[in-house]
Image (cartoon, rainbow, N blue to C red; front, side):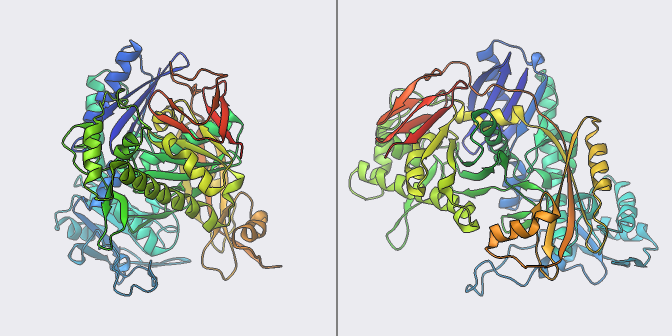
Length: 612
């Protein structure tokens, strides 16, 4: 029996796979201690299935602990050890601005302030050690005297010559403090990005370790197995590895939805999907091309670079709980502030008074006011209308239509960031809508983007949790090889060894560039680079020398087979659907406007086509 649990901003979703069928449940997220909401959702799913926790063989978990801590600045007291003369590398950063004309816009403050930076008297160059580290114990003692909870170690060229970092790690770990070594966390060049990622890893790991210890304890007491944790890369890792390297889990929650999107592409035979997961707090957008989720070698989260393999996801603050408000110029805005799980939208009747997207959908009649939402949340239409009236935009219905239009515009913008702004025509894709609110907005978004097909799984309201249950186990190893032989044998062997499975599938990709360029594109084969460069940027360099910069090896153990359709549901396979109509799915609602029609496939997935 398989169990997947995904923690969202409003609800925690659980999917229990029993004899090929999926049993689902929701429980309110508990922000102060996410593990309580996890166990509440698990107990609800077990009760619905009539099974015992001891029957669960695999427990996969995606959460937002590291994400929230990074965005809110809730980090452990961290010391940075860097090469003498380079202790300020993170604060100096890169000579670029996010907004070209905002000269005074500041980057986020470094996680490690100047007084907690320690210089190591050593130096390595591109060809080896130039100055030995004679006394690692003395440097470690200087760092420990600052009373850290964690220590980040990032020395020059340690991605190739890591012996000094290993010596410092051995000296530091004797004290029991958490230690993150840059060559172990990242393994690639570019000192700023490597140091910034290592700082994040060190600063968040003690917090995540405490959460996972509590979750493992609670799970064990409940008779559940130890959870496997979803990484930002879209694969599962042992809880112990996640606790050691929190930076691997910063996109843990959204990555479950990406894993599910790849599963949908496989089962429906629709290989190209634009995916938007609209939950209670935010909307996460990703792209599936040729059946594979688009990945990236790194990105910024909360303004901080993370140079690690991760699913290429763009997030905007447009969820069911996103609050509508009037800005100083009199314009209607939606989000990014959310009503969250407590108090939640006004219509939840838990004390919320501000208008949200869910209140708007209820006022427009798109949600059944007489039927509780999944998670046994009764809806109060009167409270929703009173909250909408506070905007002063005429009737509650007029305010509701405005909120929905603005929220849709935010999600369309996010999808354009992932397609049009990267030279991809969205009209060649189908739109995969999931999350509790995805089906409510899918058709309007598809029409705005010129998309003619919509895909909505029957389990759309809990699809991220279903993706967790079906996810692969995964280990990534990345090594910079600039100026050297780019044989992939060593990183591939290391990835296979780390995953600990002789039958693991190992794949290799390459970060390449034309000699003289500053940044790279990832390709399956270096020979493909000129073509990929032209597709992305509209030009190539005839006869240009292709330079392999980084080799990335991934070892996977494929996940188990999971049926897409949950037990029960209002739309059995073969059902024809014509718009205009509204359909209640087990944990979501699907709105089908006039001009859209389709059918339910054998997996319970609704596939709609635009007829006009």
